[in-house]
Image (cartoon, rainbow, N blue to C red; front, top):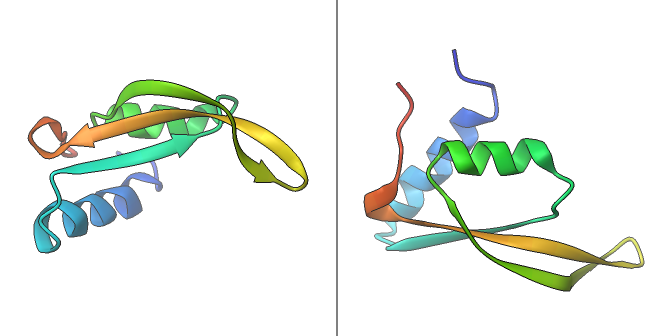
Length: 78
């Protein structure tokens, strides 16, 4: 059984690659957010980069990892 986070991600990817016809989707995730990294990795995203001080959150500049998925590399739930 898939974790409850899988369905919303799958629905979002279906809309982006299907209805909107996008070729590529990116996710920027704080390195300490292991659950989100595991989720995008399972969906087939690949890490493409690291952005120091990428976004200011609650008054602090936070580093982020950049993950991307190209439509033909997409994994679907079994």
